[in-house]
Length: 440
Image 1: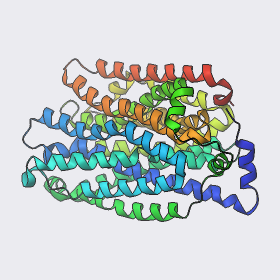
Image 2 (image 1 turned 135 degrees about the vertical axis):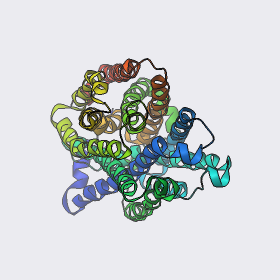
Image 3 (image 1 turned 180 degrees about the vertical axis):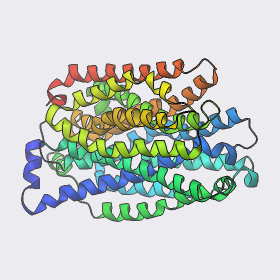
Image 4 (image 1 turned 90 degrees about the vertical axis):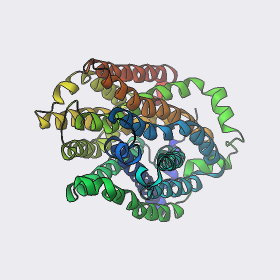
């Protein structure tokens, strides 16, 4: 693999050094929007959409259908991520990232305008799913592309920190989404919230969309991509090249991202529904506040773990997150009790705010380091979004069904242990194949 870091430093010398800051800001804002959207949708799917869009179903079936609409966007993401990543490797990062932000913004605002089942009947959930799929297409190349832009502008010794900015944006986006839902639910009656209050945060995403598009339109192409283009290192079929020469890395990243997103959406989607449902019985305000606390912790710990990876390596940070997630698998549910609300806060902060954050903070940089610039976006799109499809789409759905079995919480704890094992296997495969890159 070609070492590109020294020339990156040269690109940043002198008056062009501010481009790194602009690149970081552009990456940060995009993932704020992506995870503002996804946090809104995940929390609304767990608490609102079952009543608004699936009113004719039983409570369990409405919850399952509602969470399924959250999952459906991830089914299109591997194809969309591979295609858009391939475009990004051929025409550059900036154009793709402007397009992804526009698509995501239109879809999110559209969700806030869709009438409910009482108005449109069966057409309401169909429209919801269509917009959710559109949201997934836009998101498929967003986080990966934002990470590439941040890392490809970074100086040596700061790639972990700069690469963690999209993860920091994701955590902050989750904070903003949860905070908006918490504020609206606190200022409205339950009837008003179900009728129109939940729509307000979706419509307010227009502010982030406008700023993000303006910022990205003025961003230059990354130095690493320009050099690859000038050297003739780009290829006409980057996906074919990835599958021919980097199959092992693709499989390893799929495993790591399956664990990463599985943990994240287990807490964001399933636990919010579980803690506020019949099993635990905590109020919506308490569950949203606990999620908000975990997301605030993630906002602090993401850049910390990114900077730490520049000192000790990417792999040890991810290994820590996977190990802590496994350790917490059984204690997590011991803490989540209806008679002790502080337990939910402690569990969510430790599991989501610290353990899952350690993985997401540096996983994007790890993927970036495993592929050459001319095929990097394609590799990111294919591997990361396939892991997203498996982890983020399947985990909440599986968790809802496991909780419905009536066998207690141990099947849910085993699910968390399985995610940790999958991620560990992927990390071990990366170490064997790319030890020099990952530990440097």
